[in-house]
Image (cartoon, rainbow, N blue to C red; front, side, top):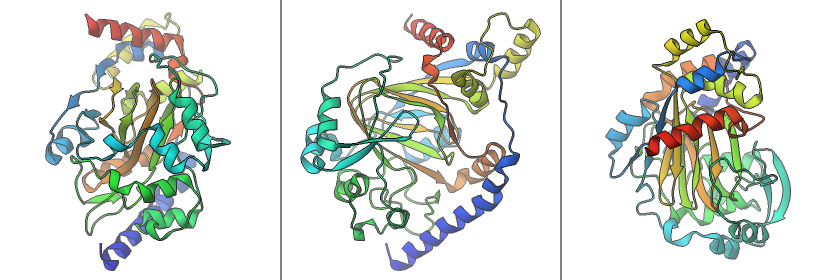
Length: 367
């Protein structure tokens, strides 16, 4: 891209950040949410329970119309088409290329944990056996993103990362593996608000997008229920291993958060009038999608939707966030009402009532 295009897009990023700071974040203290859910059990039980649809060979237009604009999650089963990463990436490759580096792990709530040698960490998690959805291990930290400095982060987000000298694994890996992956074939070339791309094309392998991360996680690791911080769309690109979990409609955001954090009434003896009213209100909009993400697949997690992700076998995945021009008004209005994202203090999979509901739905889908 030309110097003019790079500069224009960088200025657009700055303008977007400033606009949200003034229009949303400085007003966030006024945002109210439901902090206790009296009808949580009936809402969860009466929600429409689905499996995330899998498609192949989908066009940019169809992807946008059927899924992106409707906030409908989808898995593109051939999403890694033409990616060298499918053949190159495994635990041995990263141990060989970056194994001597020290990396800082994160827990299930994204909080920084211990520093370890990358090679040792990769060898440990690669040897662990697979688990089933809902089986969670204690102290299974994962590697997602290692920071360097704010200035270097800005340079990477503006497409100038190739000029940066860094000791951060994430930044160094971004530089070295850029030829191994590319923008998924079903996403548009341009017309993005986040990152700002109004001139030229978006190349996420050369310009680090919001929340870019290279994930390494062990079977039983969990990223607790959360909404991404900026409330933008995420693509979860699965290269090695298997992940599963749930995505919840925006109408269930407070219900599932309160359920995970112990602020929900999960008693079956809820007043019948509350149950009837909740069922009427939620029947058309409360939805729970369960997903099973396999190697070679990419999943869209639509903007603003709460989700919880579990690693079922030793996993390597890549993720980043984005927002297109066409989505901006809906995104801004909803974010103005709800504020920034959040992460629950406990996984929803650990709630016995929710486990009973999803296990029942798994069985019903098999009959």
